[in-house]
Length: 132
Image (cartoon, rainbow, N blue to C red):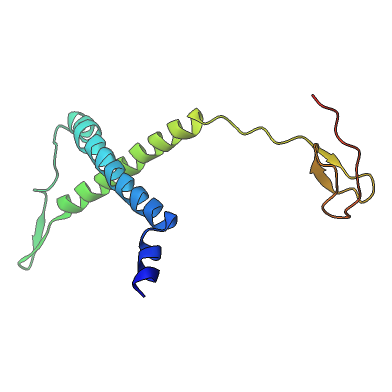
């Protein structure tokens, strides 16, 4: 049982998940810092108020702190916007993968890789592709 547990604990997938989790935490801290230190001050400069937390009203002794809710909404929107910008920049930096050249099998018309010498669908032998 201990051997099984050790095998489970050191499996590549578990280690990869742990690394992804730690990187996720670091990324969340980066996004939070971006929102708190860059985007929120821009909002404060526009509206002249860095925090809406003190906004509230009272009905029958119950205090409704709608300013705290406004802060949470603004933080959510700014966080989503910052995440959108990061993902957009990441996607732009990736080169689109060029598809592998394909040809049709002359016997069954299945699309197969250009370099294939046997069709996986009908198992017919094909002429080898000319060397490039």
